[in-house]
Length: 496
Image (cartoon, rainbow, N blue to C red; front, side):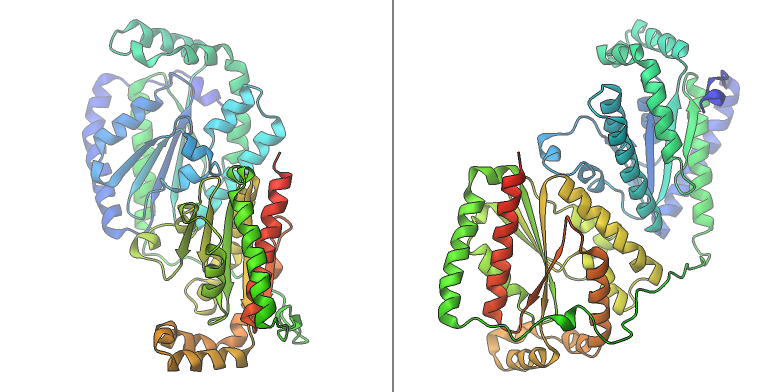
């Protein structure tokens, strides 16, 4: 796999000095065109052997290109803040927006490789990490990103020679550390793991480019030309129409029976019993979230439901039991310009809380398979692939011991009409009813079908949906509080 990167590639000084000026000019032009069109982001990963010129390459890219449109991220050892979140959080928050270039020195491959070579993980763990990385890249490409992955390679002999050269020169001596020599002693182990990584993650949409790293001029020209060719080709294709893939539709409701129709919306609690139950379960939730054990877990509660189903009221009953210093409510509306320049999950990844905290989403990432699907804001292919992307996202959260609690609040069509009319008459509730609510109501059946598909495809063992019969607000609020307490309590018992 590395044979072509051990042939001794070289570029003489005269050739290099002749080719660099036009290359730099072309790179700048491509970068400016990319910024003007702002149709897609460019994500560049620079990985490889110690001493192979990774840092020099990144520095050179910053020198050759316009620093206004390029962001460089040296992803070293994770901080305490980053360790409190799933591993991918630190990368999601640094993704470049459309029209920009993001360079990652160290990537989502770095720590899985280091952990496997050091024996801290097994081959199965590495394989799972690579699968997560591959699925992330597939999603980013599907969302429009251009991903360029460079692997700087050195043979064992040339790595030793390169480290000695750097160590001998006073200007570069600081770049060679004890860790570099320790890694050199493990060269064969690194080689075996690196080959497995490249073999499993060099895909059609995000292939690895292996570059021999010993000769700086060869390395620099190669990386620069690959970036230029890829960006220019993508820019030239920006105006072309792509063939849309038609996915098989979700299961149709032939007999008109679906999961929402099986809910008993007549369930009620009288006001006196509600007050007693509310006090009981708010008290229990308060004790659970103030327990020392709660510091080791994270809770994400997510609310979806019919318009006027009572999401806001339910959220207020939860927050009344929480310490205001340790929870956050994220109201989700139409994406901003900043959010539209990123993959749709970006605006949710950025709000993942630290351990010992609760984050509540009023609407969520399920907008892709609900509003965006029904209103035609994304293609069928986009919302069909979103089911697996969402399941992957939630699996990463749960794997990091985050409790994911998902509520769908369901009311009847008649009850919704009654609440809409009541809101129009009450002054302090009038702001809650909009033309969009009435417009959505006309698509009741389409939304119901989308909700049933959503539950079928994303109610998993690790992150199940809780369907809440919400015609009676008292009943709905108690069911939600009970569910929150039960899932937090179970997580605290299982967290050892």
